[in-house]
Image (cartoon, rainbow, N blue to C red):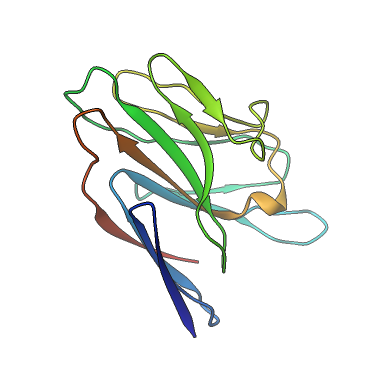
Length: 153
């Protein structure tokens, strides 16, 4: 059984079978994150820019994302996609503002907009942070077009 949806220009296709996979349409970066709990024996697997990292509960994850734009006022967004759920807005950064969703408090989820990157930092990792994370951009000129990235988890 699989599901797909279109939400605010993002398309995600996810299956609910064992050996789950998702394909997400996103213009910038994506990462799959799993967290290892000593009690639950789960692992965190961070797939970001073809790099695998194993982390444990309580550590800090930094998800790097680079972008290019000619716009002087780009808006960068981070989203979290959990299995059998919809994309959840985490935060938005621009040169003049920094907004977080109330569900993702700034003391745990933060990002700093730099010249060509917007790394997401997740502090004090919990097992419930396991998800696919992705970044998108919107500018006053236009929204970026999508590249499909397939993630297995």
